[in-house]
Length: 166
Image (tube, rainbow, N blue to C red):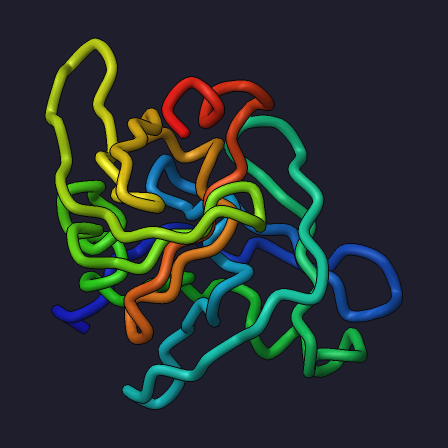
């Protein structure tokens, strides 16, 4: 369990399709769950759960449907379990670890993250694109996909931001 971080707890059943209410902690991933599974411990084994849908219910709760949980009976088996993510995923989410990642910006520009500028007011990813340097704010809202195994990051930034550099 040391290699996992607790990010929530399954509270109870919600609806008739196997949905569950989940208490989400501050460390619960906002959108990164789309990249891979969350986990629960069953008989001391980390069991992956892929999210089919997630609806936030305020800051600290959500209604979740897991892909392979399709009945209230199966969902009931998960009630009370803690939701986990691998610690390495949380650590890799720190922007400085993106150095060397292949980057795609707005689906069309391709480059490589060459540096992380750790400015407390505006941390930036420095990305080499077509022989030029592009600076993108290192904020979660701009990261739409992250694959730490393939070392890729996809960013969606406001129109006009990248055009300042290329």
